[in-house]
Image (cartoon, rainbow, N blue to C red; front, side, top):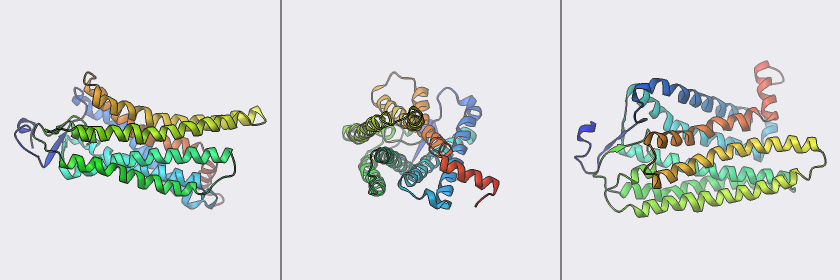
Length: 308
């Protein structure tokens, strides 16, 4: 379907994705950092999954959570990056409506899962500093994953029922809930309000739990007997907090800008959205993998063929 007849239809079977407005001539160059980040995310997260599976000493709650985080990162990047790169390289902008809905579900569902896993990891870290450790945390991981699937289903149902008669052009390199809502030619307040509910009530509660957990963790750190122990433990927590902030801050601004930032340039919308989906999956294997001594040691033995 061409752009010229994009406004003469009702409920189209395909939609047109856009890349970065005004920078079409630089698509190949822009694709290089995104392709690099995708490769790092895929290689790094698969490495974490492989090492945890092969090393029995890593079969514990925190490492299981890291594996869950790796899986969510792989799904998030793989559900968006291949299509984005095909737009950059081949100008392949069409996407089937059903494929678009599937992409929306995977993106938002696994973002919810990642948020829940970060909560579970913060809780598990808190319990490690404040014994006794409760192994029910592993069950929390399963609960937050199911929670993500259930919470996102109404978003998909509401988007599926919207009539589309304005345009089939999505000003974005992948399908998102609010982008589709903005294309609806009827009252979309219910969809928009539910999206805000997910953002503030669901994600917001996750942020509160993480904040309370890390306040308790920091209090426990500063009660350690030596400055060296405090400094070493604080360094680990700061790196974890960096990943958490890289996940929540771009996501918050991305959702708010789509609803209330009509005067924000479109290319800035696109940039924030890409950072939101790419940065955490790229950072996760570095912060939670390479910087973890147990994983470092197993990775070193893997490459030096020692003690396998």
